[in-house]
Amino acid sequence: MSGRLAVIGLGPGSETMITPQARDEVGRATHIFGYFPYVERLSPRPEQIMHGSDNRQELDRARAALDLASSGQNVAIVSGGDPGVFAMAAAICEAIDDGPPAYRDIDLVSVPGVTAMLAVAAICGAPLGHDFCAINLSDNLKPFSVIEERALCCAQTGMAMAFYNPISKSRPWQLDHIFDRLRSHLPPQVPVIFGRAVGRPDQCVSSVALADAKGSMADMATCVIVGSVTTRSIERPGRDPLIYTPRYWPDELAGDVR
Amino acid sequence: MSGRLAVIGLGPGSETMITPQARDEVGRATHIFGYFPYVERLSPRPEQIMHGSDNRQELDRARAALDLASSGQNVAIVSGGDPGVFAMAAAICEAIDDGPPAYRDIDLVSVPGVTAMLAVAAICGAPLGHDFCAINLSDNLKPFSVIEERALCCAQTGMAMAFYNPISKSRPWQLDHIFDRLRSHLPPQVPVIFGRAVGRPDQCVSSVALADAKGSMADMATCVIVGSVTTRSIERPGRDPLIYTPRYWPDELAGDVR
Image 1 (cartoon, rainbow over the protein chains, first blue to last red):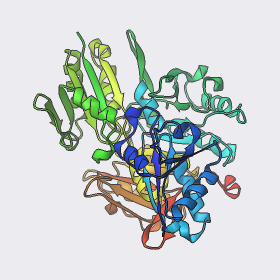
Image 2 (cartoon, rainbow over the protein chains, first blue to last red; image 1 turned 135 degrees about the vertical axis):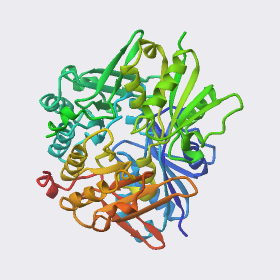
Image 3 (cartoon, each protein chain N blue to C red; image 1 turned 90 degrees about the vertical axis):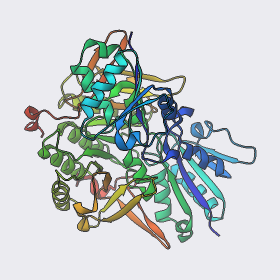
Image 4 (cartoon, rainbow over the protein chains, first blue to last red; image 1 turned 120 degrees about the vertical axis):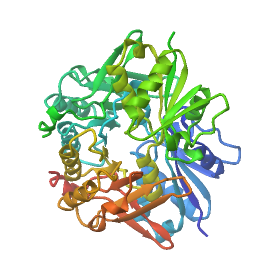
């Protein structure tokens, strides 16, 4: 008899940004899987069995959770942010697609959450207030040329962009390279936002002009938002500037798209 | 003395998807502004003053809320989903940018929420599990040529896309036109998802192949997700198919990008 697997988004990191649905689903599971830092955010009951694992083990984690669920257990797998945005939901689907038929009998539910780019954007104003894209900068699973092409196409067509997993020890130069390429397509004053740990004690959100953006301003847990040609800053006495992208697209720019 | 304005995302529509932070901020306000259907989702206390308004009055609503806040009041303005994604946060920033200096003294906070595309994606599997973009299909504030260019560029570079405000009485043909254009750049079997009212009693989420997608399958409140060339469906006996976009990009497609 087959069990249940809940793929749960815990939001950016603050207790106050976890939805009641996510909290209920965590409470209902007997086994809870996840990357160590996310599992450690939970306060399990004594009878709940925690299965923390390392980063970059998404498929192994997915298969272990699916095996337990298909054996009839009540299983949860937690992600930070939203599970469908560069998190566990796609890895679970890949494992089901390539896995035994029993995986398809599991009662699979996905619980959405507040993904990092929305939390970072809320701190700054509304940098994603116009059309935008979300790009995983990791080239572990795709060629860097594809990532570069996507970022340039978004810049050229006037979309803001949010970069997830922007840099790591094994990918030290890619973010600087992307900034360099974007500088040849966007004005130097376009705001670039670096946001990490939103809602946590170590929250750090800052912005610089694209001209001054450096890869060293980000780490693996940073969400980087690059504005579009229309993104603006509003100076406020005694407060951080408001960074936003207007809802409208100026007629005089319409012809400039590509 | 200046007051406070909280720009709050209520999530897709279910009580279980409203974050504690959003609920607290709603409870804290004396005046609550918003589009009628969102204001009607709240259960105000007797002393809270509700200011429901019609659709397409975002700037008037923003200015009214900012005026009350700058007079010292404790004001909230609610959006469905996330306020920073095609909702009130950008309208508020536009009003501050063009408004009196007093607007810049307001204690402005934005409370993120679960935006529609994440809730719709969670119901289907993980269609946004790879790079993706979010496009507001309304051409009220931007030329349709710009929208078209962005959708095609995303399809050509292998990004899935989520369309907000896909169709309305005043924009009856645009979505069909976009589907037609996408059919010349994407395989006919690419999944197209139509999701509305997620988490509400009238929830309706369905999918068709791009070859069969029609504008009449959407309404103003539908979020439409169009997969990329790599988006797949997993058939499951007795269950809806799982629709997902793998995290990896196949090497054999790398050269095909654009």
